[in-house]
Image (tube, rainbow, N blue to C red; front, side, top):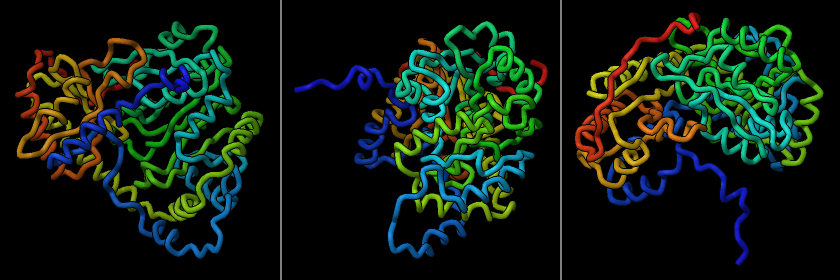
Length: 413
C-alpha cells in the first residue's frame, strides 16, 4: 500500500478541533459539552441576508467569477469606508473564507523555503497554511503579563533574518484578544519599509474592540500601498462561518494579478455565499451595536469568573471574542482531554483549545488555553461552574502565580 506524503504526515493538527473525537464520544455518553474551543458564534445571522439566499431565484447554480461577483465587489468599499478605509472594487478579490485568503497571500508573497514572521501565540491554522505553501513560520514572543501586547520594533528587527519576506499580524488578535494600537503599527511600518517586506494583516475582528484602543487598519498606513495585504471574512462579524466568504484587499495590483491565478485555479467562490454576503452590506448599525455589547458582557463575565478561580492567570482582552489564560495544571493538552474523557459535573463538561497549539516555539503554552466566549451568559456561567470544579479535581493540578489585570496601555511599549 502506498504511503501518504511526508508533507501530509508533517502537517499541523488544529488545537481547535483535534479533541473533536473525544467530544463526540462524550456526547454519545450523554454528556452536555459547553464548546469554548472554537470561534463559532451563537448570535443569529442578519435576517435580511438569510432572506436574500432564500429569495434567490436561480435556475442554474453556475460558477461565479474567480475574483467574486461584480455586484458584491462594487458594494464592498462602502463597508470599509465606515472604518476610514478608501478602497476600490479592483483592489478586492473574494475568497472562500479568510482561510483561502491566508493561503493565497502566502503563496503569492513568499517562495517555498522563505519565512513569515508573526507574534506568538498566533492563530493556529497559520502553521497549516504555511505548510501547504512550503513556508516557515518564525515568531516573536509576547507575554501574558503584558496582555500579549505587540512586541517592540527592536524585537521585530532582531527576529528578521534574510529569509523573512513578510510580517503577519492578526488585529484584533486571535487567540489573545489584543488590539494593536495605531502608534505601534506606524512604527512597525518603518521596519516593513526598511526591509522591503510584505505586511499581511488578518482584520476579521475589526468590529469587536471594547477598550480605549480603537481599531486602525493597516490599509491606512501611509507609504505602504504596495506592501500591505489585508485578509478578511464575513464569518465573525455576521455570525456566518458557514457562508465561506472572505476577501483579500491590496492596492498592489501586480500582487493581486498573481493571486488571481490561484483564484482561477480553484475556479470560484461560493455563489450562495456571495448572495448572502452582498445582502449583509445593508445590515443596520444597530446590529453591530447589539452584537458588540453582547460580546462585551460575555467578556466581562468570563474575566470575572476566571479571576475568582485560585491559580488562574488571565487579563481583560480588549478585542475579538477570545481570552488566553494560564491554568494551574501540569499540561493543558492533557487537562483538555481529561475534561472530555474523565470529568463530569452534573453530566456536563467543557471543551477548550489547548494553548501549545497556538505557539511555534516548542515548550511554550503548556499551561495555557484559549477560551472563546461565544456562548450566551447563562451557558457561559454553566461552563465556568464546570471549569471551576474541574480545576479543583484535576489530578495534575499544580500551583501557579495569579495575574489578573485590566487592559494594558499598549501605547507605552
